[in-house]
Amino acid sequence: MITKVDFIGVPSRDAERSRIFYIDTLGLRPDEHSRFEAWAGETCFGIWEPEQFGMTFAPQKNAHPALHVDDIAAARAELEARGVEFFGETMDTGVCHMALFTDPDGNDLMLHHRYAPYG
Image (cartoon, rainbow, N blue to C red; front, top):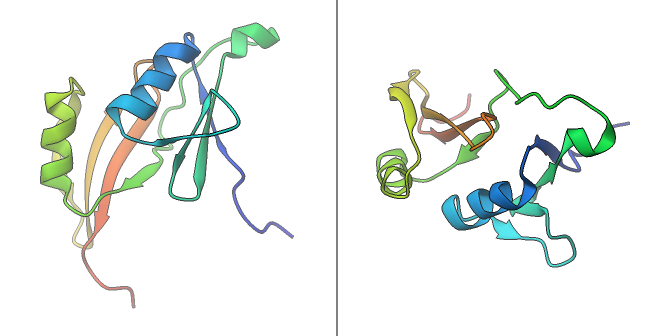
């Protein structure tokens, strides 16, 4: 029945600020048809302002989209140089490395690299 994820909703209090973060800071690909959509591979991040729809803004917590990178240390260093603040050290789970951070609205994100083969 479900064949894919169409987009991940990114709640924001300032869509333009979020757009700059996802495109300029993280390097996601801007959508050619929508100003407030950005792409990581085949996954769309759709930025929206809940308060414009009469809803209360709340950042997405504890459901970190795992943003794949080939080299966690290099990607983390580059993002830190761009002002991104990470929470704690990079974690090693025994199969992957993860580095946790948030966007400007407090939405949880993670850099991720699986180094162990599946199976």
